[in-house]
Image (spheres, one colour):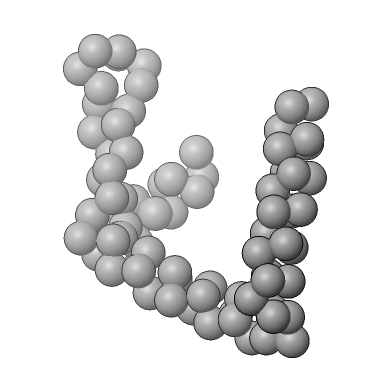
Length: 77
C-alpha cells in the first residue's frame, strides 16, 4: 500500500473507491503516470540493449525463451 500511496502523491496514479466493493479501491494511471511509464520503458530498453549487446539476435531470442521457462517454473510453485 505504501507504494501506491507514493505513486498517488507523485501524481502518477489516481485512487478512487470501488463502487462494487466497499473495501477496495480502483487505481488508474494518470497522464503523468503514462508519460513516466513511457520514459521508463525507453530507459529499460536502452539498458537491455547495452547489456545484451554482445549477443546475436538469435542468442537474445534463446536467452529470452530460456528465462521465460525458468520464470514459468517458479510461478507454478
